[in-house]
Image 1: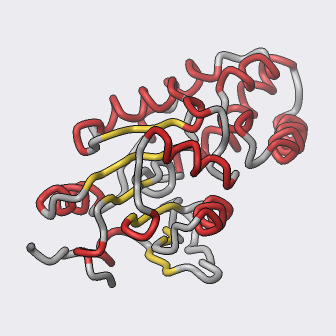
Image 2 (image 1 turned 180 degrees about the horizontal axis):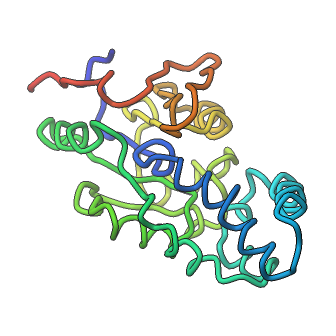
Image 3 (image 1 turned 90 degrees about the vertical axis):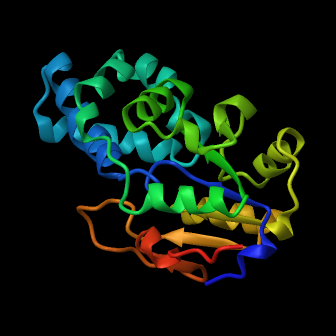
Length: 220
């Protein structure tokens, strides 16, 4: 799909891109409502409706991705609740093959995620992905979510990159639009972030279901 020699770096999202979003969807839509209903003695359907309203109110902001925010707002230990269902954390098919192929090509692999550092650490520990990246960034380190165009200028101060020579892969279309607005024109949308759900539409972006669509990478 690409002349890989035109890229120096490949920026990769985590949840839904490298990891199956089924874990996060199950966690926020099923597990948190269950524990919330138990704590506040609510019917599960009522808990789900209330939480969905609260989620939507701050979707796309840094607080939406912040476990400290939700622990405080819901009076639940969100990190501990994530550990209860950590067995659902899974790497998408062909991800490791792709990351290894990038290494053989000498590409700089940078993980760029909105995930808070605590669940990020849990996911990296469970999957063993840490060693596949030259650098790892959480939006919480920068104080701004990836959906904001300003995130990318802040990232560039910490990780100097040429937008024309950087490929970015993410499952969040709002994030891809923000990256494109900054100048990252080489972007790919993962349209099957949750293995248990149908593929999404990709709007104007190049789309892949999984990384088998980009393999094999040409040898240098």
